[in-house]
Length: 200
Image (cartoon, rainbow, N blue to C red):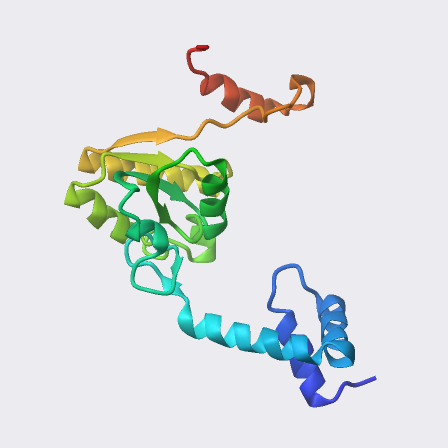
């Protein structure tokens, strides 16, 4: 059975979302058309507003509606401490810890030459300029432990060393409440290498 052109266009539009295949997209389209037309209109308006109104913060590259995001505008945040993360979702994860009071630099990805993602696509030229301004005292690397994440971390480390900026890396290893018998060897190796003095 062929869909009317407008329905087909709607289904195809949903498939641009990660993890949404043709069947899931068809189900979403049918749901909105059958009993969610007001929701569909609200979704359409929200998408349109976000696509036109959301940009990248010129300082940290996180999502923002103004030139600077709320974190970069906050005078209580320490501009000398910058956490390097791969995505805005990582910013939210760090913020939920309630432990961090510095600023961020959001890469919006990781180095992946095979996918055409190089230093410029990650804004590393912007980061290099910030490092050379002299305000940043320490970078905290919070990139993943994949091959791409490690390559990105080493590239950032080289930039920071050239600028004379200290670099640390978040500890990685055993999760809270976890038992060692369920932790894989690579994670345990990271935990052992990242050990620190025990204090009460």
